[in-house]
Image (tube, rainbow, N blue to C red; front, side, top):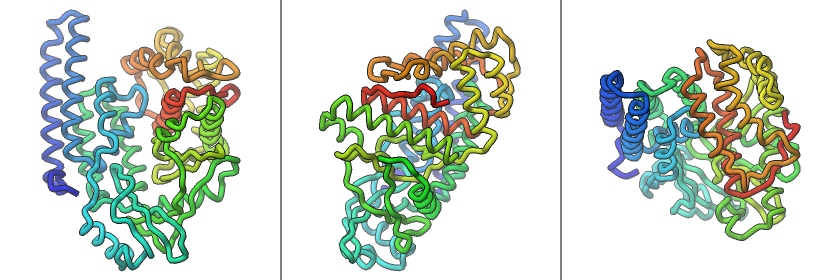
Length: 424
């Protein structure tokens, strides 16, 4: 890692403290001015403040990278949780991590495998072919000629999680829905602690490979003898990432088939397996000429309780059928009782949101290529964000929603028609 990235706890906390202080000062100034402004002026001033705070946050993240960046990406994908200006800035921060130099790479191998890369593999490419917020991936070859992908975690990533969570919690204070954001951060922290232990990722990968019974979905083989807490070696799979695949100009039918397969895999995982691959990054899907798809990177997995698995479909059916009582009952069943469970609250706040949620499920198929669906939902989401009043946010909702809506965004990029009706 380059010297420009603060690694020590004090250094990272210093960056966090400065960012949080700047956000806090801005919020205080807004509160002081608010009584003297008209309603329109209050909203304009708040929008300007959100844009300014978002730039402060982005600046801090580009210094810290690592888990701070990963946390922000995960939180930013949760629909309606952060103001739009924050999500816009965070979208700039994906995949901007400097690679390990060769000395640190060699040191990591000796510490984890007690061998150098050259001793562990018959061939090892020292230049990484992929890099993200937590680690980088190298191509290598086993003694028997099998090509493998070797993911190596950046040094000190695990120990930086606590301080980086402090960063995000500090910045979150003063924002709308602070208590919900903080609860979401608790859930994200739990998943991150799992994600930085590659032994868990190896186990997740094996589990999905053994339990997926869906034609067209593939999962790589993991090589346990060359995998540790901070290094994971798995089968190297030839395939194209989304942008590269789309650049080959697949037909509408091919694109529709691929998108349907991704959606069916999500629903199969949620309803049958009760755990999902919850990182809908397009880089985690490899598309093949025969129409099959390989899923990679099982570091971020979310298991679901029977309670959530039973109540969430009821909530979706309530929105689809425009049944206010069913929606409120489902929220209560998930532990998200609204303080204002009234018909007016449903009509003014939840119904517009529910109509947007239900839209893709009302017809036999839904055209994501021409609907601008995710953009259409922003007014309803923002309205919900302003009025939502729950004491407890269902933690499982965070990763379910971010995965589903992440898929919707991918479908829009693919320009596809997908059948969703009857899913819930």
